[in-house]
Each structure stands twice: as C-alpha cells, then as structure tokens.
Image (cartoon, rainbow over all chains, first blue to last red; front, side, top):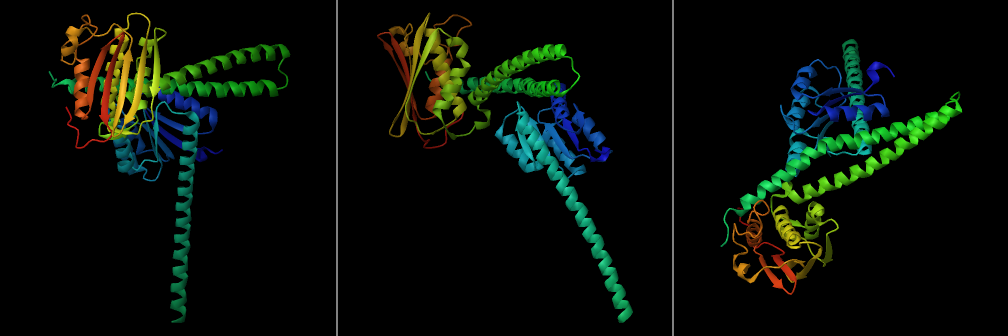
Length: 160
Length: 254
C-alpha cells in the first residue's frame, strides 16, 4: 500500500494508556497511520499543517478543553470527516449536546468493546473514502460540464 | 422532626459515586482493550507456530505450551474485567446522574444495583431473599430512590450482628408500589420508635452512622408523595416504602 493510501486517524485522549491501547489494537489489525495526542491544544496547533485526516477519535473530559469543543475546532479544518467521541463520562445530556452541536458520527463509552470500535472505525473510514470519491466525481463532472459549455460557445460562434 | 437539608446530603454521594465510576472507566478501558489485543496476538502466534516450516519440534512444543499459558491468563483477565465492568456499570446505574429528572424507572433495577454496591457487606454472612412482584415502571427520581434502598439495606445489614437474612418484597397495590425490606436482626427498641426518622438520631457508634440515613429516606419518599413506615417485633424488622406510580405534580427538589 502506498504511503498516501494509508488512512490517517487522529486520536486525542489526555490519558497515555488509552492512546497506547488503541495504538496496539490498531497495529494488530490493519494499516493505519495514527496521530496520537494527549493535548487537544497541541493537536489543534498541528492540524493546520496536516494534509490528510480520515477519522477523528476524541476523549470527552480533558483538562485543557473538552472533547466537544475540540471536535468543533477540528470540524473547521476538516468539515467532512467522521468525528467520534470516546468517553468514560456517561451522561446522556452531554451525549445529546455533542451529537447536536458537533454532528457526531459515533458516541462510544469507555470501557469500549474492541470489535465495536473496529467496526465503527472501518465504517467511518469507508464513509470518508466514499465522500472523497464523490468529491472527485463532482470535480470531474464540473470539468466536463465546463468543456461542454466551451464547445457550445464555440459552435455558436462558428454558426451564428 | 422532618429534616430540611437531607437531600443536599444525598446528592454529593451520587456525585462521588459517578465520579468514581468515571475515573475507573479509563484504566478499565485500557485493560479491557489490551487484553483483547493480547489474545488476538497470541492467536496469530499460535497460527504461525503451526504454519511455519523449519521450526524445530522441540521449540514448537515449548512455544505452544507458553502460548497455552498466555491463553489461560487472558481468559481469566477477561472474566475479571467483565466483573469490574459490571460493578462500575452498577455504580453508574445507582448514581444515575444522567437521570436527575423525573422519569419512569424500573424499581427492581434500582434495588439490584444497590445490592451490588453493598455486596461486600453481605458476603456469606447475610442471605438476601428477593420476592419481587410484577411492577410497572414508576415515575420518580431514580437516583434518589436508590439512596433510600441503600440506606434501608445498609441499616438492615448493620442490624444483623452475625448471620441473618434480609427479605425484599415488592408488590403493586392499585396505583401504588410497595417495597418492603425486612431483616431478622436486633430490632428497634420501643423507646427509639418516635425518634427514628429524626436527623442526627443514631444508635451506632461514632464513625458508623451519621444519624442522617433514615431522615434522608423520609424526606426523599415524602418528596415523591409516598410513605415510609416500619414495624419491629418478633425478631423481624420491616421498613415499608409506598410510592405512587405517577407524580401528581412536580416533585419539589431539595
């Protein structure tokens, strides 16, 4: 698999042990590039220079900023990619707030089940892939459309 | 005799428990995930051992034995983790911070999660007999009702000096549900009967009881427009809580 084909997952959790667990879990499964951060602020700083992110997983309760604020910041830079909240703080009100405000793709509670998380990640990445494909197709259609318009203009110019 | 500040006393406990559950979920999440990853890795090693030619038979046997040990360890860790997840889940159900509003709740679920919390006080010492009737959902503040069950059950365990039995009966009577908790402990002496729901009244030593438990129960049940009463004699003490299925008007919060 070429370097640029490997899906990029951005993971933020203030607990190193969660980053390590997910890193190991992803490593055994497939080819992913994992960008792991314990600091959401640092992740936001770095995100400007990131060329590609296919999926984001964020913790909810973090000392610097909460997961919902973090995800809304990331949304500005990468509006289309799936955003997942992984939280140990089970609280329906916050879940609803998160889903409504940020447009969450999934809400997962700690302790999570690896099989569930695997499926959610795969589906999320598939969604990103399809969206990218769609964007590309739209660009192609627009290009062809523009070419047609040019031909149309040319015909008019010649015959009229 | 009716306490005023009682509800304020019960909420911090719920907050504490919910906070604790949250704190536990992070390490628990890591352990649970790591154990799953480990058993997957072991599975792959096992496959490699079978497939790869050129592995000396002696090495293959020794490695397989080690892999077998690892598989056993992973299985045990998995069972242990499941149990922890169950306990933390009960703590969350008990605290019910996400249900700070009036909602229809399963009374039996509340009792079960409370029993899980006092599990260590019961152990082999006290047998709990559940005689659960067919109950509809009850409109209530579930987290606060669990406080009532906790207080009554803890009192019951403390009333039993050695070995004994607690019986929990639930039943429906028209538009009410009845929850009765009985113990065959030391009972309540006649001179204490009038003081039992008063805040600060305790027969337990310093550090055992705050004397607030039953006054909190009284207040919470009253807030739900229910009743709480007790009966002690002939070797059995029973506290009975009756609650309406629906709240006529908004329950006053403490």
